[in-house]
Image (cartoon, rainbow, N blue to C red; front, top):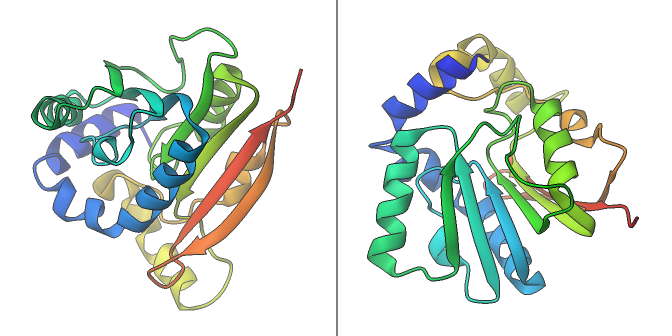
Length: 206
């Protein structure tokens, strides 16, 4: 998926995102934020979007959010102001393939329903691994492709429409497991129908 296509697609989706994809991804978002908040510390949310997750955190964490879409970020900033979210420290426009943060910088990286959207997801995962502190975690909620069954057929049907929809329907989990610095520690399916997966990866200690 081209970055220009992502930008145009999410400019189009921004006004209605919360009531469409936002509703579909609620369970994954709640699960991820609950896990992250229990850990505490510094958090980078990659693909913060309209900021739907931001009110779910509390003062145990300090959250930085990034997104490539200015339209989405405008809604996220409005949400932060309206809800007085003091735990949100910064919201920035940024390409996730080239994160403007030092190595080993965040305790936790959140990537909720974004990895099947970005171009070059392996490159994004390499950047996520770089900025995560040794012993830190990468918390992912995402849809991953199936090899068989009804949902697998639906995924293949929608695959050619990725630029229109703004996401890869046939996104393989191995894409996010390719960086040797990160090892899976939790994996479980989420409702509805197990369409989404909650995945936690841990970065090796130095």
